[in-house]
Image: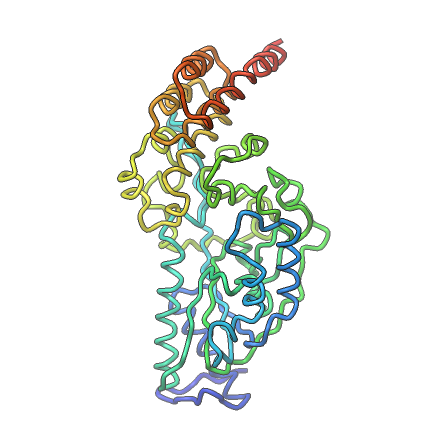
Length: 409
């Protein structure tokens, strides 16, 4: 049993084993008090197996589209302490649980999209660092001297999940997310690299067993093997990081997601058993942060976009990405009520990327009014990208009509 430190009792940065255990217990207590749901420790040694794994993923095209994640980055990520803070002695892996009561789309007759749960509140790139900096200050107060530290969240030169797995914070699920006992994968991860010697935790001897439901239920088949995501197929990549057109063959599988995707987490039995522990920071302040009106996303100006989503992770997709995604979602919902906003976007939107996806969506809906808008736009649209989408949409109308006739028959 670890004996708590007495008030005002400082410890050196390199305490002996028993004192190190006491110090570690106090650091974890401070983490919990500071709004970090979970915390675990690993040493600052290199992650020896990580660089070859990442380089293999890059070579196989699994990280295509993430152009910043190069082979050089993979090497840096395998030894983050040497890259980021040579004096490092320990890495504290922390997380904030964000699973709460799951409100469904309101039954208000509005055609709405769906935003991934982690992005519905304040941007985690703001929340986690703030709380870790507060923890750093509390640690310095605890030991009575300066402690060198680096605060990291979703940083390119460290792999959050690798640190979490080696520290025993959680284990890798087959969907490549970290599963934290009691919380599933609904946990935001961050790291505090310290020149303080803490007692490392052991990795968890847990795995997903024979379960492969996340592989089976991924809408696009992006989980190509256990623990392996093919990024170009992932809905999260396509709706957030993709700056150009979403590949046509993927659009029908995107459903009503306009920012991210939670399917592989929702179907996971461990995640399904997670205890609700909502953090107020991650609660949506308005309906547009969780289930936005698709018409609103199509029609919003740059100013309205910034006013609505400032301070959230949704800013990452940019106005163009959200409007494009809204067009795809309206096409997938397939309601006649979506034709009017899509037609308006087709004729009036200032971005050709959005007009092109609106054309695709109208072709997918395939109604008489949708066809009318497509043909009218064909006669006046000059942009080559949009005309290509119009040609595809118009050519697909016959197939859409035949399918509907067979369904009606």
